[in-house]
Length: 158
Image (cartoon, rainbow, N blue to C red):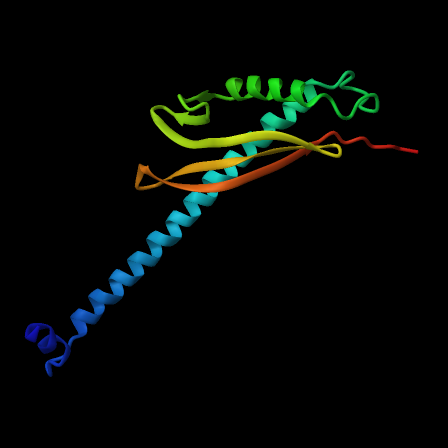
């Protein structure tokens, strides 16, 4: 304890100590910013891939894909079955718990947990939780709620 007091009350100056302290603070902030930006990039990538899979699943179930005024709300069960096929074709795999995971080699990029597809008015809503691995290891993950909406657009030119 007396050694700590002598460091705080020394007369010779403590510039190296303060420089080391500020360096540790700056390194901590840079790691925090790097982690946040990496997490955001992975979230945006997952969002794009899941939106694309849901949009394709909806588009495949239209009766006439060139004229979309015949049916703009296909059955949710048909859309969900095509969504599962789109997950497989996009490179997703199912783990033992039934959750969808996206891998790059042996590394899990993200995991879609507790997902379900709902229909509200003419919109199909994919809801779930994304488990995204952080840069410093696959054991450390961030769980982020996820929701995306897709719908059929009908443009009336009259």
